[in-house]
Amino acid sequence: MFPEVGTARLLHKKEVLKILIVDDLPDNLELLELCMKDLSPKVDRAENGKQAISLIKKNEYDIVFMDLRMPILDGYSAMKHIREWEKQENKDQLLIVAVTAYSMDYEYEKSLQAGFSDFLTKPISKELIKEVVKK
Image (tube, rainbow, N blue to C red; front, side, top):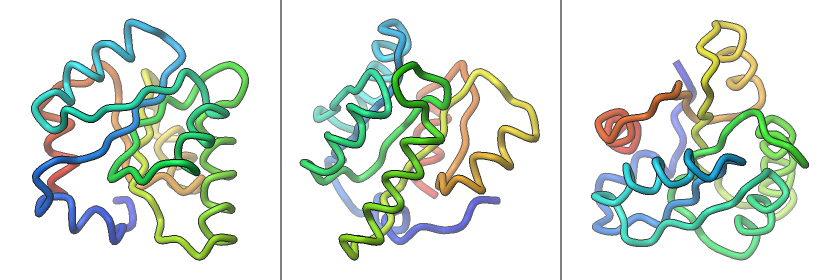
């Protein structure tokens, strides 16, 4: 199981979550945003890891759902940059969930080692997202 992240324990107490979804495919972004609709009216989008890093540095998110395989900067590389930035800036670890179509055990392990807070395989459902948020 993934390590518990401080932010995750607080999520169930908030009425409105600020969410970032990161995926290079417009259809996936649309689907993820639709799934988030019940959780938050405030959902930002990024199409790659580079955009995600920029948004994370400018905004305070409660949770990020990030695809692992994207052009420009993949989820693993983005995760490394984000965790390094958090350490440099003395910030709490953001709850970042790996999202992938690959459900292999090595993907799960690799995402854990990269610093992701949780792991979901596509297709994503509202129920799965709510389960992750309530952890």
